[in-house]
Image 1: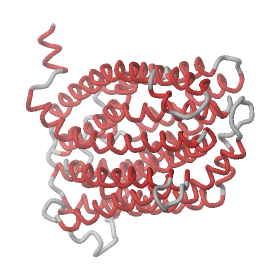
Image 2: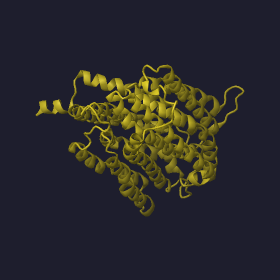
Image 3: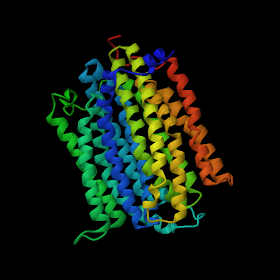
Length: 466
């Protein structure tokens, strides 16, 4: 029994070396980014509750935009990964162009929404039912922060187009370096511009936004320059801008498989924003506490998020090469590895989570609520790791309709009505509401388990090498 278990779920040294060579740069890249967001959040948190809440609300809106961009590049990315595994660089070039068009459309729509509906969008998260904070000040700081952050939407979208395509080839080091450079810039500028150094005045939330925008331009420029000066490693980029055309057959395939994935990411991200808005109905202290909790959660969650991304690369390349049994074997081992890692990380997060809120310059009630949110988030992490891996498993085989049902439909049909009911129509404490909503993930785990075990995702979507 033990031997069979090891054979199915435990890989050899070469397997883990391959996975870690992919995962570690991605984890480091996102760890650096999350750590700076972590420090950025703490710095803004030193200024005051209203400033922290205003920035937190805008960052929730930016999260929706970021995930929409991720969905836009991922829809074509499942084809790009398999094209690369097949050795078809022309096909990968077409997917790159598709990403450019998609990201341009998403960015234009976001600029219109944020530009004309800034007050309305931020006000959705402001409620005067709480006992602390001034919601008019939070709105003011949020609008100031959003006005500057909008400048960074274009470089972020363009940078993600390049980063996603670079990762399809298994090259995760360059995006890590670009992110490290951007993060270092962001960190230094945050301190200088938020608090003021020497003759530079303290700019508060506006300083935090300026630092983030400059960092995004730096990250974008690094990946673009590297890609175009290393064409031997990025054959898809040769001639990528000579023509803007995409063959009709490939375009139709990407639309069929990619559109559900893109819509899924958009609906899932907006769903997360709606759930946060449900919590926010309980007052500004909940917004602040959730911001503190999500800051440290995001730092720890990067492990399972990036291991899930590795599944899309490893399994996608194997499927593109027609190696279905190898893909299934690798998938089992990577899912087990991710859940095992996150079980350990969950314990660490619980131990550190009690200390983290004390760093903030805010009310004690907010700090205590944040501690409870952190513990709940840590407890649910292994479940999130499993469902995240199953999502990427299904996606790697082009099962985008299934992932759409599994992810966003599940969120909108089950989780959001449940969160709305508990937060707005019951007298349950917000901590209990948060716990019950978070642990709906258990249902998703059960569904994902049977989907992966069925093997419906084991398919080559780019043809050849079957």
